[in-house]
Image 1: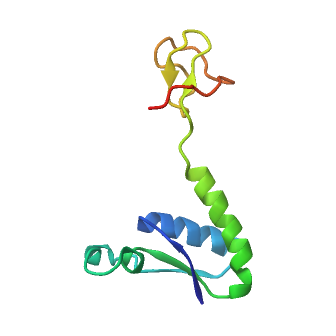
Image 2: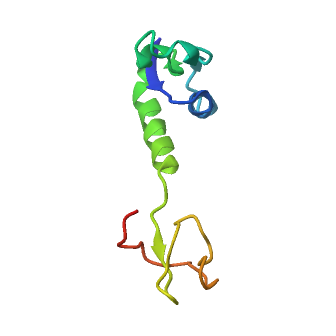
Length: 111
């Protein structure tokens, strides 16, 4: 067995493990209830961990991790094409004028 992922929250560990298992990569979550000892032991020991059974699955598992982390990245803010106001990238409509943000370009403003 080998450790493939250290999560900040146990639900992230379970999301990764479930995705790996769906793809036929046998994965297990360890330390899901160990968060109370963070500070007494190093964080990488106490945080939830995903382990895979076979080292030959490591390359495929790493690709799943890249996909997971890319999907979890926040969407960039977008500028409304109608009024120019900045809205979060997850919005479909401008918060200011209600115009559609479909196809709007990312905002140059960093928050």
